[in-house]
Length: 374
Image 1 (tube, rainbow, N blue to C red):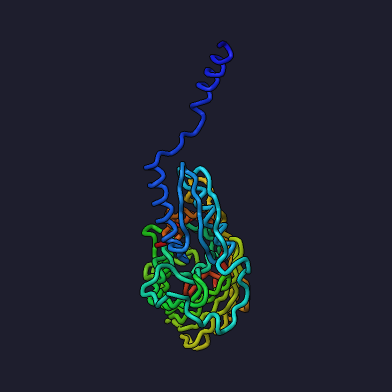
Image 2 (cartoon, rainbow, N blue to C red; image 1 turned 180 degrees about the vertical axis):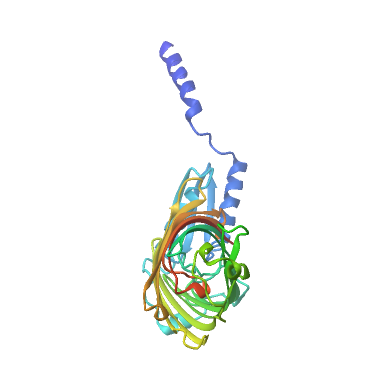
């Protein structure tokens, strides 16, 4: 009897530390949450993955496009609130063979049961994270170091890519997409009495993107025009972060081609830009670009992940000097996918100023900012 009482006392002491099994209603809620998240993945997997939930244990059955997709899905679901364990019974579509090269006929063949998608969410090619002039919404504080001294700069961007048509090809997630993009990038001198506008760049373009498994590419036709701020032209030279510039009509149309390869959260990309029409007429035409990026698995708070990128560009107008840009921070995403997210980023830049008519000015700056993805 004494032994039984001791055992009962030990059980009562340990009981508060044991997790309670979810009720049936909680299982139904958790299953609906997981299914909703799968429906918003890019590329989508809803309809090909079955979800079973019992006492908080999530069982996944079905097929996906690649082993990397399995890792991504299992890792994300395992971080959801209320998930005790994930039982993975997913398989790679078409068997264990991994996708590598595609023949021209394979990627021209439409995916079974897929039709042209109007106004698709997201894009098949992700704009480089560390590229200072990719269309996105952001607000950034920067500390500039130039030959004129040190200054606090506010850099803002308002822009986005909008998908018009997507044509799936070959395997799930592969295809072509055409869209339209636009952006305004502006910088302000925070050390001046009225936070003078220094420069504003206007972009509008037509991106054509393509994806085949881990390979993706983008062809973009775009226009850029740059405009100096009137307050900048009126202020004394010794109060400006960059040398006084004569107002010119800096404007050009260009063709950009970028290609990338992704594997296990890492990405490499390379490409270039050719300016077709230009003003002034002697503006350099050639630009090269390369970079690397990394996206980690979900970490604390269950909806955040580490992101980092390095971008290097060279333009024959500036003697092929390398302009280096680094960004790293955390991306806080929606629980339904990465399409809507907030990014908190530290950044570093060393090279020619990436802002319009200041392209000949050498600048080094550190910054911290927030970017918003819709």
